[in-house]
Image (cartoon, rainbow, N blue to C red; front, side):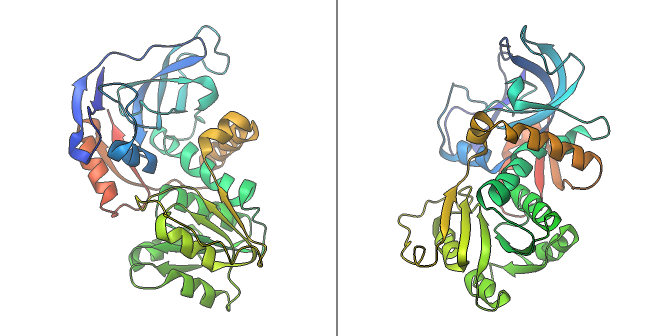
Length: 322
């Protein structure tokens, strides 16, 4: 099969488009012909400096397509079904094998490219907002990187739950587009202080929940933006750096909480998560939630797609098609 591979980590130009061996199919695995790859933030971080499970390495968490083979113990899928799959790597290829517990049948009315964008973004958003953020109607949430996949999903889910939604983005144009998805107030982090703005927008009280996918120094600011009994959920390092040290001295007197979130662990440990994602696919199929796709690149131009994401121009998901 064809795949976008690399032999060492680094900038997007490490990618090579080559023939590699087809993936093997275990007893609980399905094999799909890949029709759409949703490039996740973790994919770019892995390419930049993650571990190589093999050489050449095929990066990528999430992709969707049609089932062409099933393992002997598979019960959820048949050949010919459409499925969206998750895995620790292997999405940037023409074929992908995945355990059926990390794959979802695509509803009949939902396009495959849209389905390819759902589990990571919407599953993560739901876990951050409700499982760990305990967001309820009437509360205020601050969502960083509002134009990202997780950001767009979080805005919609929070608004659907009756929350007041504040989000950050790098431009006023992105913030304006996010209003169509449920954004109440936007903060341009390139021109303003998001902590001061969050305080101003809440009359000095601070927000109830923060979904922080940026990390580094932004995470410290997220803690500063919390109100009494506020909850901050750290879900990524899109800023491509780790906070060396966090000052948490203000958290205890304000009864605040800082949690970490990783969707992969929840899928292993919490059966509810699989069904949540299945429900979100159904809601998107019904038009009650929306997937936003920015651009689609051919698989052979994985380097261009990753570079585009890292330029921070994207609004929504960036896809690859084999």
